[in-house]
Length: 279
Image (cartoon, rainbow, N blue to C red; front, top):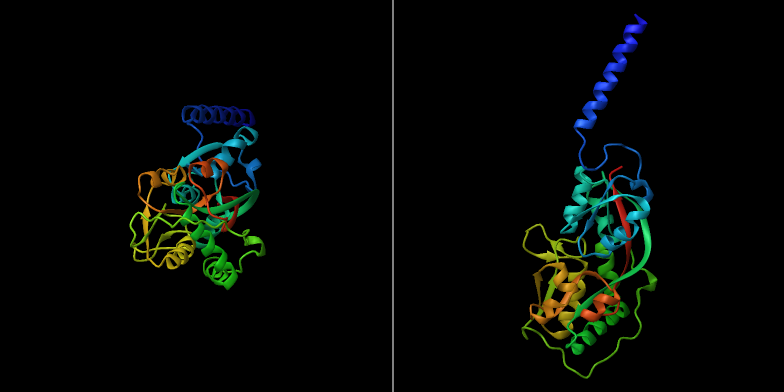
């Protein structure tokens, strides 16, 4: 009897092995529940990234080291919802948006931050130094009169870090130039909560960036008009050459490459990369 059971068990094991081979497919999100606490825990697993972001670059720079598969999404919601749905094991993106997503979706969690020393800035056309000077002046005044901290508290529930004050902004004798003189036209990329996203009416764009740029518009004496556009067009500066907008405000990390394409304001938010998982 023992002999027959052993033969049966061996045959069953062989059948299962053959079935597994027949059903083999390319890697997808792992079904194992081993805790992921950093990139090292992603070997053989799927890491979701948003295209044209510093998070994507960080993931690509460390892919060979940690052995994960990268899955690219056009926007933030696609990448983080892949984690929520289980089609990706983790997502990497800026800390502010991932903490906000985890707050809204408590089955997910931010488990790691990477000290990348990033800062967000607003960008403008190379030919618009007057507008850049106004943006920097508005940010400096907002920090001095407390309105920056009020906006920060509104969207992040805490006081702004003490080290967010910029150096004295450069001035310009040139007047700011607007695509439409009656308004400040801002290009952004939705959705990137809590920096810019649609309100519950699915029409009004709100967020941290929106409130800060409202201060710039107020200083110019005009309302702000927001245009949703591809992120890459903003960072490349092509939106300014095409006269689609005056200002780029889309939680854009300042990099030397982007700075060459379109100059940035002083940094207004200290960011870093973070890792989101579904424990």
